[in-house]
Amino acid sequence: MASTGDTATRGRPNTARLLISCADRRGIVAAVSRFLFDHGANILDADQHTTDPEGGTFFMRMEFHLEGLDVGGPELERSFAERVGEPFGMEWRIAYACRPKRVALLVSREEHCLLDLLWRWRRGDLDAEIALVLSNHRDAERDVRGFEVPFAHVPVERGRKPEAEAAMLALLREHGPFDLVVLARYMQILSGDFLAAAGAPLINIHHSFLPAFAGADPYQRASERGVKIIGATAHYVTEELDAGPIIEQDVAHVSHRDDVPDLVRIGRDIERTVLARAVARHLADRVLVHENKTVVF
Ligand SMILES: Nc1nc2c(c(=O)[nH]1)N[C@@H](CN(C=O)c1ccc(C(=O)N[C@@H](CCC(=O)O)C(=O)O)cc1)CN2
Image (tube, rainbow, N blue to C red; front, side):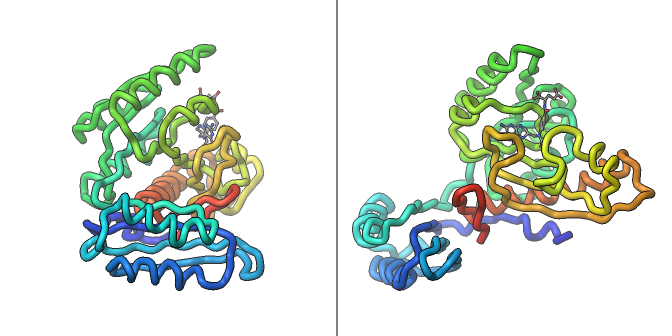
């Protein structure tokens, strides 16, 4: 399992990230680099990927210094659209790293992923502002308040999930805007209406190596199947349960000697590390989604 070092997301101040996807063709890298050069940008990091040089899809991430730029953000974006974006038929955006992204965390009873993210944030290893924790239980309340983060309890009563989701959306609006909502072992299925209204992408940590054992109780089902590895998967949340674009995964070996509590215990470390990696990559604008898959730079 990789070290936690790869979850640090200290953004470079005064930089921006240009993210691009488009039909692959010759001249894209040259056009983007020339555009940035012409506007006085100093490129700090460049990465690209193509699914197929002949007719595939091209992806690019360029990180560059804003210092020395001859125009401001809005004019830069207007100029990029005219000179590069439209001629190449690009889907693109520019993310400015000047302000930390605002993050809300959702949790149910299992607190290991929540606390891991809060500890990384307090240590300065997560370049974000964690501005709200929502939970359908009160178990984490005392710990969250210890981090001086607002905590709200929104119970989900049987047959009254729409009311709970409405209350959660109101709290997200009150404490927002948010750039990301993280389901840190939040164990309620969210409706499509909630996802559409949340106002930010959502990342979930599923406690199995998807697509195996999607849904509830994956460790119980894995044990019954006699698996020799268990895993965790961080993915963007879609209306279809545990079927969103996968961002990060990892596994650990287990054996016939491990019962379900052992799998749960071993799984906790995988879950929290995988989630932290996925959140870090999202916060660093390193994840592009195409169809139901991701390109992670
Ligand atoms: N729309 C989505 N909502 C959620 C997703 C998702 O991918 N899309 N991921 C889940 C997390 N999860 C597994 O990782 C999961 C959570 C809950 C359940 C489930 O069956 N929940 C029951 C109630 C359980 C309870 O009351 O304790 C339910 O919601 O009816 C399965 C998988 C988070 N949400």
